[in-house]
Length: 325
Image 1 (cartoon, rainbow, N blue to C red):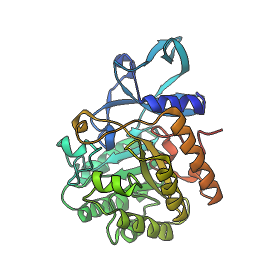
Image 2: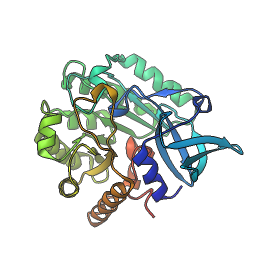
Image 3: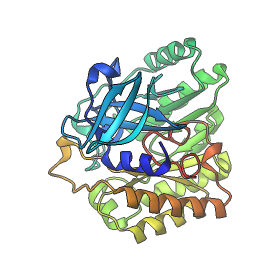
Image 4: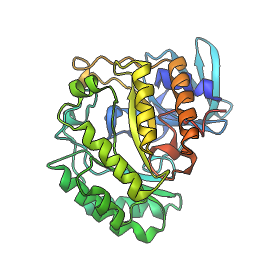
């Protein structure tokens, strides 16, 4: 699987596959893919996470001990289904709060009536992941059950109690005035606050309850506190923005020292009447990721230096350094 093929798989997002080939079905509990079955496909040193859909133009079959993905009888790639640890391979990546008081129109989480894990439950999950011998990092994320301050407090408690594992710890939450200081003092290594989109009009329409300027300022302060190549942000592509807006957003984030993660938008039936999502094409994914690579290189930012959360996983995105030749 080369970068072109991975971009094509990301553009499709889903594949028709006999779910018996997947072993234990994995349901995502965070982000636009929440509530859906997904699996990691690994080939040629690259990894992609795909959803399952019997109506997808992509078909996956088992052949000679490998999983082979076809499009219109054309073989795209052969590889293996990669085992998840927690949410992704080699990480204990845990969503503490499977619900949210915010109502971003592209995200199904507020509609799923998810549960809130106790700190003790999260710590038990991490201990079990550690016992497998496969845990290389701990990553914590959360929706917002009551207040953003309480979510940060819970994340701080988890981080503080996980330093004993001596693996890098990343945290992705909604920021507060003092979240950077609290998480840094607790022992977090990397931070992710998600801008979602840098199109101001779209942001107002889709995430109007949140404050983009506050998130951007929190990201800048995180870079000052955690350092270079330690702060990133999910940046969704396919919500109705144009390429120039994306490029301007990339420039602004990179100027602040933040690494954008270009995430192809995913539609969800619970949100079909609230947002118009057009998943980006293979060509658009490649074009914008090449632009991102150029901007990162000029700013001496390198996605390969991140050790937690999405950037080392690369399953849901085309990595500007790990995937592009």
